[in-house]
Length: 397
Image (cartoon, rainbow, N blue to C red; front, side):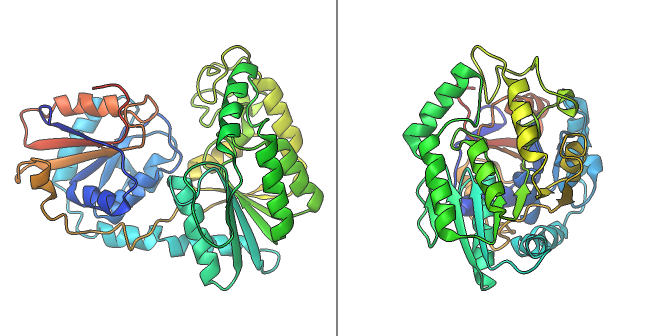
């Protein structure tokens, strides 16, 4: 522990995460970009109230009130909110959150969308990940839910560890993903490479013959988007597409922040050096044009986890599509109030201390705001409050 701060490594152990959430008195999120953060949902299902910066759809996750979120960078506001939350009765939070955010609730809403024009017996999911990461967990939960509903389900994913299971297929080739990332940074084009992986994916779709394809994330250097979508359009396969970010209607950005170029046409990108970065060329106008031509005449349903993102889509060239909001769901058998045992003692946290938790995979990145949390912690050095940051920190902090 450094002063009143403990930094813990990233973990994929969900049971341990549930203990961290259950131990905390407050969960704080200081991200610069978010859509509908799963961590806020998990924390509340474990009975921990949330607060943080009002960015993206973050405040929409709050079960109690959106008033516990302050403008980005307002540390004075966060300091006040900590004192407010520590005095608030949150005894019914876990029960209320679990009712709203159960994976079964999410599944029912998605099935309604799948079956809008008749029952779909075979559903194929496409995502960058499977079982791990926020979208990977959502896809895996939907896959299992569809199977329990007596239907056939398949997952095709591009990156991450090998996941074994019936009709679960990692089509992405790790070496090709690395090459894709390099070519993207050199050329400025993203989502335009990985030819072998893309052919493997299309071949699997041909074999499985789905009644509907549910697409999630297509960025992250693992698939060539154009031939995949052209194939789906040619075969006239119904599509539900969950947008977890803004990538599919911008030239490159997962989060456009204050930039409004996407409302007309991208180009002269102010974020060309950020993910997915380009070392030399700004190809955002070409990428924007390609996506617009590819998707404008495609009949598909867009699902957004937040009202905020729904409103953003309605500002883009996709504004006339069928758009609906379905909140992300989680496994409430795992994320619930749990016995933390001797965890406080193991972490050398005084019994009487309150705990403020922040958690993200790359917690110290600008996007996730770990440095804001450290600055906030400095304001409570003389108080009986311990701050815990969980995630990759990169350089020593």
